[in-house]
Length: 448
Image (tube, rainbow, N blue to C red; front, side):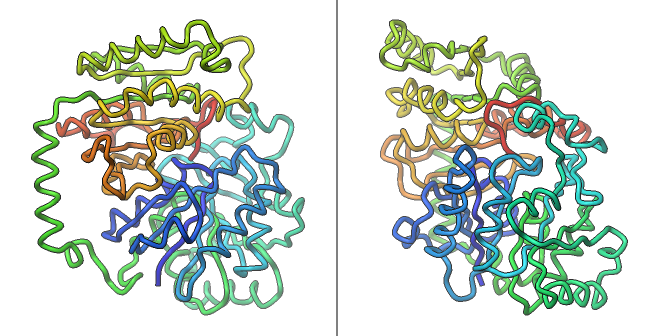
């Protein structure tokens, strides 16, 4: 058995797949959902970014279904990664997959980050999702009701509440089997704790019915934790001596590398703002904020060349750099991809100078990796919930020992960026357990 995760943005693909990497499975995140692009990856888990967050619902649905049809093979299970705060075209994408993959088990809760589900409605740290800045920005006046959102795209639904879920065992599997047999297309599952999601994972992975999972990183990591999921392939059993030697050499080379770390922040969320403030204060890092007008106009802007030079001079000192997208009165959440692509173009001439890249916001990460010619990364570690570290799958001619950290914008503790920076410098990160997960804020292009 293997797993295909289909996500609508890059940071979401990584934070959903990292649980499998942490459990010892070879896990690859790909920027292209095509069989040709992934034929060479002998991975247990493939997380494909369809980059559909900003598309129309119809195009997102078409692209998502095409990804599953291109990448499905015997024994491969499907996990549709959705944003834990229900942004994007997730309902249309689920509707496109359902006729191909069976009953949709819909459980977007991610308790480790404060997202739970009760009565089919998302709560963020116990408060309705509709009250968060992120929801108001993109869905003002719309109810965050999973049943209603799935009904809008033509799917019939059933509800499994927490009490029924916690029965567990044969009673739970019988309930789910009955829903599948009834012809219902989507089962919405409430969950308030990680244990709730583990119970759901244990039940559904053992069922014979055609089904697929629809969730965030919360359910995915509980599935990954199950023993024997892919024939008990643990990292310590599958890592060859030559691979261990190569990893040792890479670590030694990395320790000798004094090249800079670049932190790219495309998100304008309040969460990202707090994370940047802690990073500046504790790391003493230089910061540049690029005016959005420069990014909108690109090379046509009179200051484009000056900004490219300024970034090059900052990195040329081998000092780490925090590079951010500014905000102005013309701000529009829909322009996130455009601004991210322009930011990546500014950095591209200097990418070869880096030892590490930290990218906040899925569109920011995707744009930078695309500009650098990196089509896929292998996940190797998780710094905190939703903050993943990877390396290029194929040897990167620019920086063969580059490490890449991805993080959703309105996501993570205030400590997240600093912890990522510490990881890339191989200093022990300060514990983040005492810090409460940050609530969703107003994001330009964030994901969870």
